[in-house]
Amino acid sequence: MQRIKEVLLDEKKRKIYDDTGVIPGEDGMGDLEGKSFEELYEYYRSQFAAVTEQDVAEWEAKYPGSKGEEEDLVAFYGKYGGDMKNVTQCIPFCETEDLYRIKSVVDSLISTGTLESTAKYAKFKPKKLTDAQVKALKAKREPEE
Image (cartoon, rainbow, N blue to C red; front, side, top):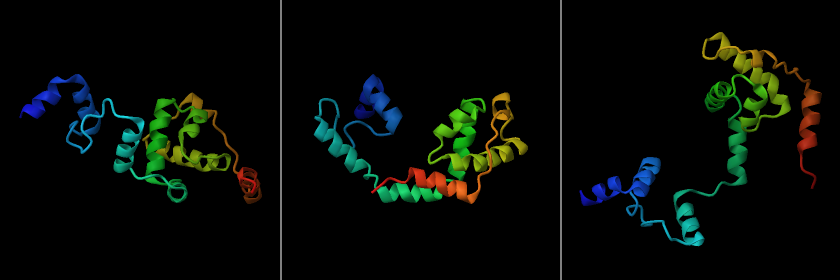
């Protein structure tokens, strides 16, 4: 009980608990204040695995068209009032060749009542690209070896 009282009465510790659900000192690291960068990094790595290129590639393969992408579209559409320039900049892996597909998703969300059309959204008119145009865009982005 004393430990709980200590956390609740200490603003710093309470914020850590509210943000992370971890009671400072009970996570194997103790109080993080005053720790060196190396100690903090070691603690971080013990809590979170390193992100590999393979992890990113796998996410890139499954994110477009996923429920997560749709949720992000809804959130950013609301945040930016349908300004798709800003919305698409916030969507991971969204490239020029994805804009027409993204518009189709948003149009569907508008038709179901999930989103409302806005004047800013009405200005968003991406062109459907041919396979050759998509291939050319992707080739431009490929890093040279």
